[in-house]
Length: 61
Image 1 (cartoon, rainbow, N blue to C red):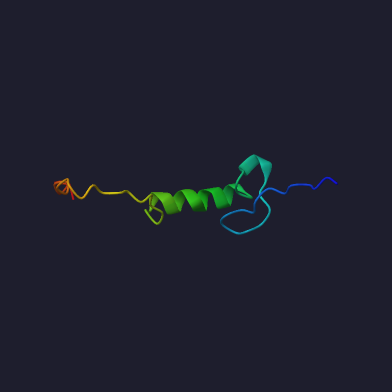
Image 2 (image 1 turned 30 degrees about the vertical axis):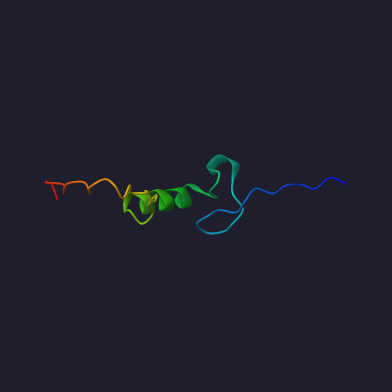
């Protein structure tokens, strides 16, 4: 018995993903995701080594 595998839904709107914009359903959802990364709404957690001192503050901020 063969089961057809469906691609996962779009992570932004949950519609079926489109092959041209995978994993998104459209260019719009891909742009929404990019905007979230650029606005730092998403972040990749970084493990800090407790033995190292914290980095110096950024002088440009």
